[in-house]
Image 1 (cartoon, one colour):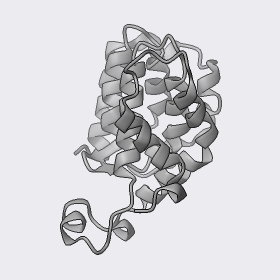
Image 2: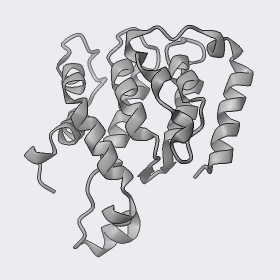
Image 3: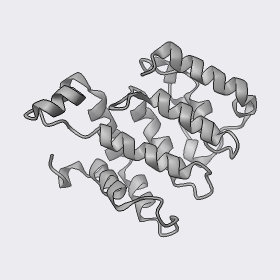
Image 4: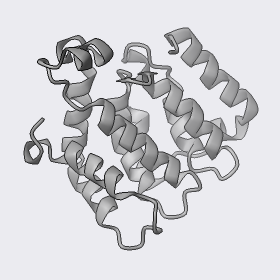
Length: 187
């Protein structure tokens, strides 16, 4: 689990290792609107998220950008951070870019976001103990709302016949479909 200071430090370290990413233009269609998000106003979110998102497009910096971004967007292995809903449209868009080096990792991050945003059954004491109740984790609903708001882009990714075999497993596909269309899959 990383606190806000550790997240800022991780972004600063990334920028130190890949200074060219900070200077790179942010004109990729999948990142349109990224600069308009006031990332620093999201609790616990470093302002450098756009740099990490741009870094995902760089063949050399991409793997490290993905690692840092995953750590920054998650509060723990069971909980998405407050910035995840704002980042989802860009993650979905970048996962749809065929030549992105980190595409499998992006799909994996989307699946993790979908998994951790699943509603917790308040009647399941063990699940509540492990994951906390939904009222204690409002980020779950915000992540589900972000998936729903961008359902067409995620559906297009899932229906892309040019996807490499094995990029999205049947279980991962079902998990993402559940995130996009929660009313079809009651919990």
